[in-house]
Image 1 (cartoon, rainbow, N blue to C red):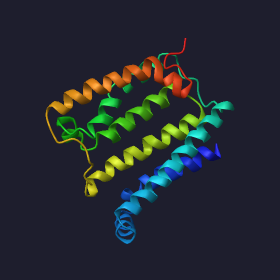
Image 2: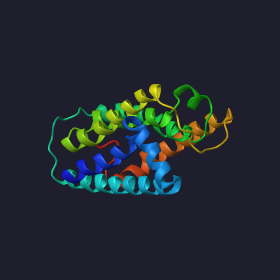
Image 3: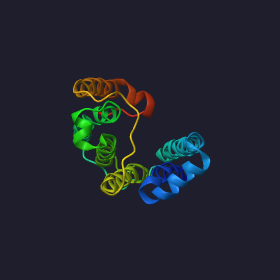
Image 4: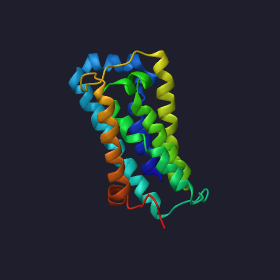
Length: 191
């Protein structure tokens, strides 16, 4: 569990600099240069992500059960997950979805975390998915009070919405039918 917490703190911590210390972030980028700052940011992100994956995997071997979710929550999670991949893609293919939500990846992250919180009942699930849910909500709220940094992506176009919905639903189907079990070792709908 310690690895999970350390990884989560490192990963979400580096991603929270723009929320809690935007002047520090801008100062570091100016002092180090844009590319070295991105490199440091990426290294900390990758290390944190690797630690949280290792920690979550280890915690699953000796789970501390907080609650037993009813079977129907797997179906509720599947419904909540439907827009997640389109929202992640909409971040990089701007159209009406991105214009409406401003940062659709954060909305997708909140839905992903909520879906997994209601369908999993261990302490590790609560720490991992609860941490991501709280972070994404805080980041979304902070958007009202800070300048939005532009993300590189495709040019803004109306057809992007069609592309992200179709591609996102295709990725969703691949995850539900095959990839989730292959990568996570868990069937989305256990029998």
